[in-house]
Image (tube, rainbow, N blue to C red; front, side):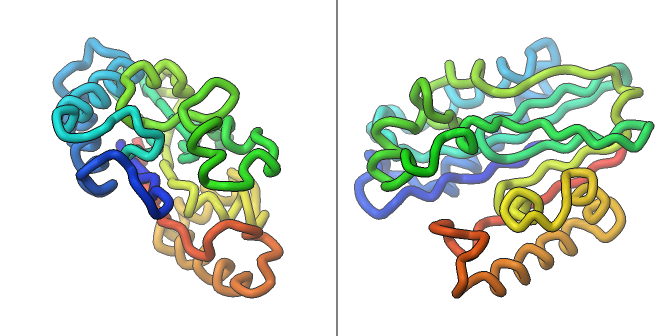
Length: 230
């Protein structure tokens, strides 16, 4: 299971000739191939190699040290007959559903812990917070960022189902407070991913003018949900 959410840069120079979709396609392809062919690698190692492979594909033409170089958040899971491995980097989410009905969210909450006052401008985010100590981390061009991911392994029998979501879908819980993580998981499991996205879109549209929930955030954000039963 792989879910990537490309980070759309503000208008202006990015130091790269390539688009965010180009980057996520390359990174996603590398993650898929390495996850399957290199079972001896941990998921952080898989992510590190995938970032490195993607960086090599445009290192000769692009300024990869630029803070706005194409990048993405990552939610990744892999399972075998014995284990379930998971990894989350930045503000996508992974929900693990156990045999007892408990839903465990796997979250990288670094961005959420940054005071809103420090997120005042895009330039500030780029220069002092993005992929920096005291800020938050994304999959961009530095393979070493993989060690920052929230990752682990569980016995297979402790996980019955998984849901991976971008932050545009987790708005239902994190911004609109319509329900907690177990309630969100129930919507996806019982009604399907489309139902959750439709609910989020309705809430976004209703808040378009008042901005009571969205604040400075854009009205609509990319919302992707992947659901798997083991």
